[in-house]
Image (cartoon, helix red, strand yellow):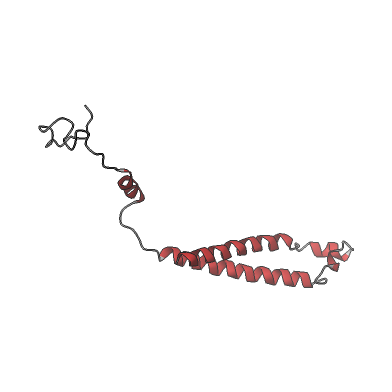
Length: 123
């Protein structure tokens, strides 16, 4: 399941970058008037109106891919098993390390202190 998440995330990022690039390459509505007076935009690779159609259709397809991958990432993230407790509770458990006794297994104060409840209080 982890490889699926990585694959969908990669496609999601590529689609986002593609949408950003295609939106920046498109001309605004006022750019058509400048092309009519010979600015050179009408002589593009796709023709006078072909570039607008190609770019807008490609942007729409990439936007749809972005939308589908967003939903897929939300589904994959929500289907992961929930853990009981909090994140801080797990951090505290992982940081407690048992320390061996210094006197060969006896408590630091001797045999009389072995039954004391406050062993971890420094003297």
